[in-house]
Image 1: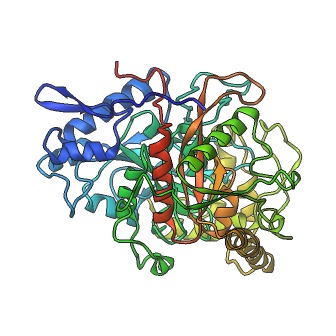
Image 2 (image 1 turned 90 degrees about the horizontal axis):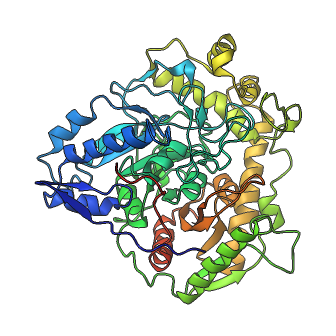
Image 3 (image 1 turned 30 degrees about the vertical axis):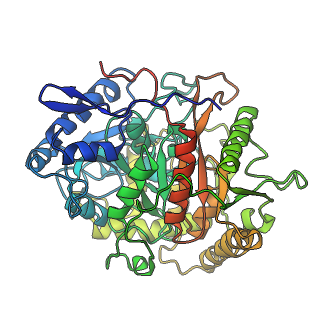
Length: 542
């Protein structure tokens, strides 16, 4: 594991104001500068816009930002006289939103779909209301994998028919023969993650159904919290599956993620599941370098059971070396490392939890073979997306998933580069979640991932957290609705049999429901000891 030298995250004086070194500066440093009057919201917003112009629209053309908020500078100007405080902790902080999060302003909310290109939302998603109340400047909408990667089998991470392809800022130029990045930017919150890594914004908000926060955070060397389902309101987010969907912060440090989580985690009558949430008064409190001491960390890998090793057994050599060094850091911090395989019944899933779908993606290496997406995804998709289109979408004739399917077929040349086989399968369900196969699949997911998986594993070994390489543990945590915190772990190279420049690999700490604070404390201790984040090369201010 390469240990980059710690970069100076201070703010550089530029005349009477201060221009943040956005590729490195933690949000907490920027908040401090705003609070001290050393920088204004307008200066910050202009700096972000300049970097977007230099590196997203030009230069490596990262394509992380789908659209800018036409009112961003006006909003920032109104906040120039407001400094961050307990009441408005994010006053003046520029934040990007994944383009499946509704805003009741002049910005469309499209999920990356040509069918929704003109669609507006009736109002702000609940989390957007919370951000605005906290004083954030909504900078714009980040590109994403179309419909959060539920449109088509093998759709590339970060591709949408409306926004095009997001590029990984560490390997932006290496493409395969189909024009697809060899090192993907992670899906589906790829634009949100790339924007944070490349310094195009101070922080961003992404969403996850299964891996869409964790994978892009890992690939781009940033921090995210995939929360317990119900910690952050889902009202106003274009859905895949309500049983697993959640939004989450994407930041450059663990402390920044905790600060954002303080704002985002709130009960919401529009999302009744939030009534069950449990949270501390302050997620940023008690972040300590010694938090790892005595913690029991599960490593789901046992050399005595090599066939039952889905998380560590398939790591390439440099990934395996990186994880060995991560574990050594945890041991040096005083953690008790428990090496034990995850129960097979926990990770392999139960009978009747997947649905055979013919892969019709014309550019897939597996075209014509059967894909096996989760039943829960496809059945909840039709039900949930139809409700969103009915209750939130305006300025569009698209009112159902069937309308989207028909629009895409009528505009196939632009809308269906990778097909829509998953939408076709979802559209064939009843859409009311009355089918026995759906109810059975949902029950089996919970039985496997919770009862026979994370709960059994953590109970048997008395664990505080489970350590996963990258996003390998995303599925079991997503099925259970349990939280994970991703933090930079180091750098690897090589992908798809090709040599590549170094790119990040994160490490995830996963745990039980509502354990975000504990996981943040553990991740913070590791982050401070390892200091693995390094901004993408070649993205210095021009």
